[in-house]
Image 1 (cartoon, rainbow, N blue to C red):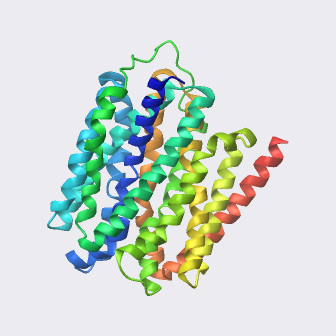
Image 2 (cartoon, rainbow, N blue to C red):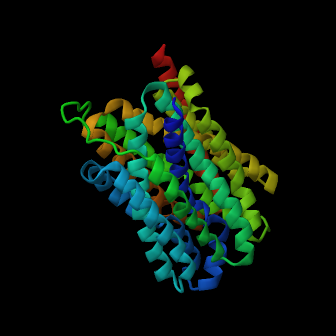
Length: 380
């Protein structure tokens, strides 16, 4: 790979890491936001603010895929970076939940542009082993971006709950690199259109959405579970979620190696097994160290989701369809993220945070083990 291609790959990897800021920058301060704004539904609204960008991402991603075909991948990518920095930082000025949710909603549209154009650029500019490695690195950097945002938000949150919103300025600092390293990519060859929107793609999207619901159990509920353990302060919440992000980074960076030994479908079974086991361990944890171990296990499953789902869709599409199909990946993923607190909050309210983790963890672990066994036997 030439130096120019390496810099292009680096830019795409770093850009993908920005998307992790959406939730990670707010996880340590959700209870603080709830306390500041107050009200009967403060906890629920603070959790909604955490995932609010996911709804516009889910709605806009398919249209972003089509937009990249018309306006060009480079133009969409650069514009989205600019808007991400502006709308992300705007949360610093919010004076009410309404204003905060508005800025978060607009931020989601910008993130959809980065995600759709970034993933498509990666699959258009790189092929084969190089593409699998890049997708793995993108997943790892998304997790690493989460680490950076989480740690920074944990310390900045001790100053004020508003300070973590300034982390989004990183998108503006990235603009000069993107301007020089993202090439203009010609329109896809309309005569080369591999694949179609069939049942397999629909199943992959459904798996992505379900996985996202499960994966957001940690950032949405663990800060409140930490509070139940008697620990307060944004730093404690940051430390609680950190192991999952570190584990996700390590596993994603090894995706190219994992693909040498496992096909994509068995990896899906492995992913559910790890996520379910981690959730069960979190629910059973009687101490903070036990919770940290469970978070590391659930993070290992998280690290398999992005590169595996993206690779499966890329393998089945080409030409103009690939841009739209990649938008579909983002739609499914962020629809799941947005639905996560809506689906799980009633369970947490009825059963308690820990009991909810135990129930979901048990079911998902069984599902993962059954899938893994069936798919591995079928492979033989």
